[in-house]
Image (cartoon, rainbow, N blue to C red; front, side, top):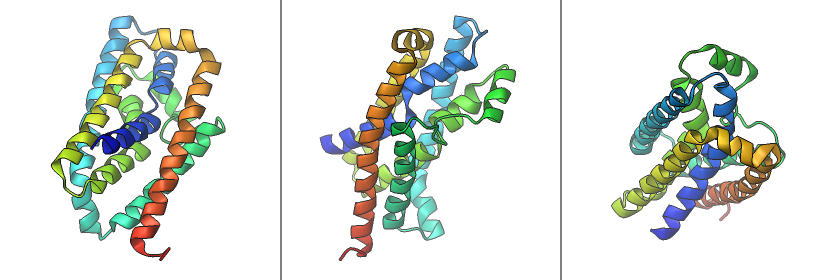
Length: 209
């Protein structure tokens, strides 16, 4: 159970990227007052939590309906996480973590950015959704392990909320270099987890036997 919680926490921490989100929130809300920024943070994390819980508990049923095996999910999820990790390590923008130029412009023009782009795709992005489905599938229906995954998810969302509430301070204290160092360090850990997911999927599919 402890191992499951640790792996889930590390995976969600890497895919959500709370530090990056704190910097992004500060950049996307340059003219917002602190109460408005706090409101955005609370709404974004709440909406993202709902999205991720739906996929965590309903993802397996969806996969069964589509005829997708757990081995295929492990391999595809590992590839997606690996792509994100490579982008983090080399300082490139990963698809689910950074808004595109057009998305950023649209977000700057919107009075409320809590749903888009903060809740999705920045917090509850493709990699995080895939990770939630994969991690819950790994529990094989064991309630204690499922509770560990959900607890890890909420722990990361709590960290995310706290950092979003302190977005200006985080950006000021760490600066660009500090954010890059943290992001790349987490990227190395995420890359190792991604490769392990793929190896587990290949073993389960018996392609390596």
